[in-house]
Length: 163
Image (cartoon, rainbow, N blue to C red):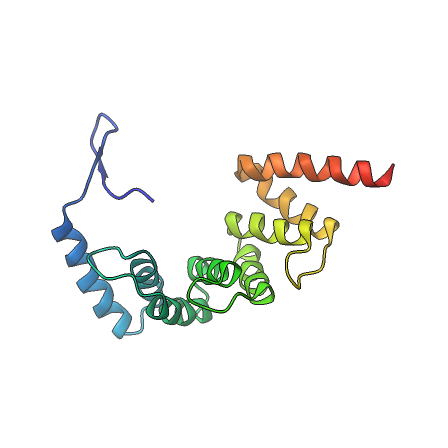
């Protein structure tokens, strides 16, 4: 994700590190006060080593878990991705699927695409289910060109399998 501000000529101007440190200070304060969105953002900071903090997946996972349980879709997606890849947590396709589903049901397009891919391929312990994959891709396709392309590929795969 790009950080910065846009000037009238649509050029990206990077934010100085001081602003990131100031943002981090306020995020920590908000998270301590129980703000779930701040916890989700702190998860991103620690997961990627942003804002002058050391990368710390254990801390990122904790923030993501708290934010995800409060219904923050970005935290549900990001935590799902960590379970999908096994980054900072044991690899667990079923946990990833459950978290992607929560985010997808709230309209988070990237979660819809990841969920569809898991069902399309039968990833890990997630059973292969091309109709469920198609459902999620149909919902995501109007909002994401990759989903639109994957829907075409899946439709061709289904047609080939039925011949």
